[in-house]
Image (cartoon, rainbow, N blue to C red):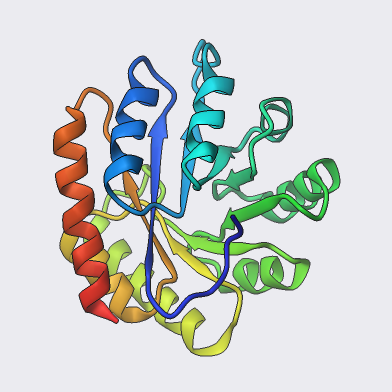
Length: 210
């Protein structure tokens, strides 16, 4: 599976590698189409990670490890998702040097148009626009995210991903603005059936938006 631009907006999901994650993901992937999965690995969360990666890949979705290039290589993930930081350009170049040209490497440009354009020029497989957790004015940040996605879609061919999406309404608005992928955060502790229902709602909204 590769991250490519499509005629409609696809669903990505993100989750923490905690107890029960593999089972919840298996239920989700069996029920709805998901392009790729971003896995956040916290301290002590590596147990069973290789099995989770194989399970997801076996169901046709790509696995991207969040921010840990060496771990992505060790567990044979499809690539990495790099969260926004002041050194995002250097982080991208390091990831590409380590993982090579065939790996999927996506990077979050935050609200920086300059970083987004530079990442595209460097060869990022997708450019993400997220809202860091420290941002307090989420409403204003959400509007800025919409504007960035629309700007990117009008000018560039590299796929865009909307991260840190607040809710279903924002997901639909981002799809209408031109996002190629919208990422749904799967909250730890929620029942698999509830996650499947939410994902189905998002997929229906994304399909109607473009």
